Image (cartoon, rainbow, N blue to C red; front, side, top):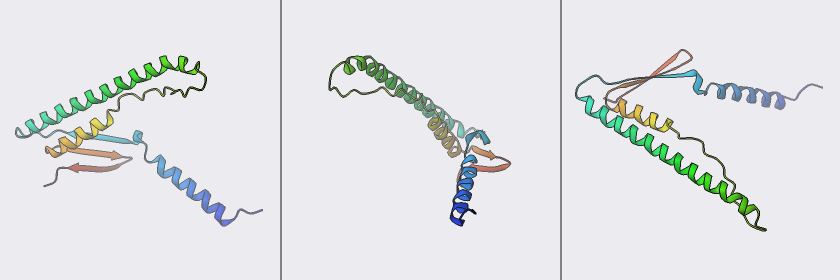
Length: 132
């Protein structure tokens, strides 16, 4: 029995989507940030660095708060489960501090100061520069 055209189309679309999504992986991407070199831009760069440091501190604090909540929920879970009819909150664990947002904000800030950000994907080269 020969497959229907709709089955072949569905298989093709699944294959196409898989290939397209495989192209979105970060492992094929390289980013190169070039800092502005003018003396006037140095104050701007210093502000970017301060903002990045504050962002990293916020992410680290957010992770510490998550870990504290997770530890509290874990310690309360056994007592909760021993109580008949109780609705117990399962600790979910924490994902770790997400510094990618800090990196993205820092890169955007440096570009606004006059720096450049070049992104390379499998031989393609894209650049992001400050608007004139």
